[in-house]
Length: 173
Length: 173
DNA sequence: GATAATCGTTAACCTAGGTTAAAAAAATGA
DNA sequence: TCATTTTTTTAACCTAGGTTAACGATTATC
Image (cartoon, rainbow over the protein chains, first blue to last red):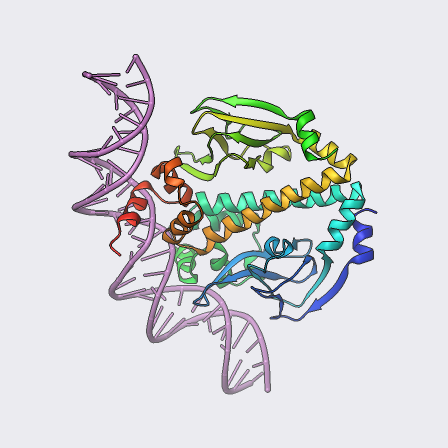
């Protein structure tokens, strides 16, 4: 059984309305999600209700809270910015399939490796770059991001306030 | 073949002097390293030579540059703060072993999942916490860190300058 | 044990980004 | 379409942290 077959057999397809949560911070949730259609944000809220955006998700992307998969609670919530269609796989089923099938395990390892690369990149940007450098890099990688995502959300993804992002955008060159 | 057997069979043991690099930023390096003895730092340098510390490594920890494993170059360097003994495994051998053996693949998936959790945590701290909150959290998790690591290096791990860390430490409460 | 190098602290000054608030612009909805 | 909500901009003021430099305290090195 390869990855696609697993998805065919065990994948659960679900639709979500715009402005709804797939799961919330603090939930239990043992699923890995694959985005089929739509746009989402993964976000943290602190005690004061302040929002921090971990990532945006577009068709083809996937996500899970690794804390929650390992028996804990979701450290972040997953929120639909547009009407969204997801495919979800139970982590237990994925692990079982991996244990019984080397080809499938290999797909999972590839998935986790690509996740590792993304996280390594994000850590690098947050640790080593200024907000302005992070903004330029984001624009370079996703030139049409502002068609999909509000500037407020882009700011919270960059780790700054919307006011600060507006300043960066209009800074005299 | 389980994980320990793989390590026994293919693991290469190596010793490094204090102040030496295991690999440098920009190198090719297809190994996964396991720390047996010693202390290391994984660090980035920018064009100006400014250092940013990705992580510290102690016995039991493991590391690899996921970019380099995927055919790219090491995005960071690995530097010994003390005389160090490492065990290294070629990623190609690991992947081959995983493809041929479900039990072993499962160990690799566990390893990658624990890596994912660590990176999720680090991303959260860099995105959502202030430097002072990050410092307190580090002290709570590793109360003896300042016995092992200089304050300069702790500052660069937190993403601030040594001067700023000194200020935080001596801030009137 | 003497000398050099590194580390930690302090001070003065600077800058990026936070906070609040208000107004303009844009998107959403009845 | 008109009204309402949300987003973006701008301004004034504030704070955390950066920069540079000096000095004493440790640590290494010979």
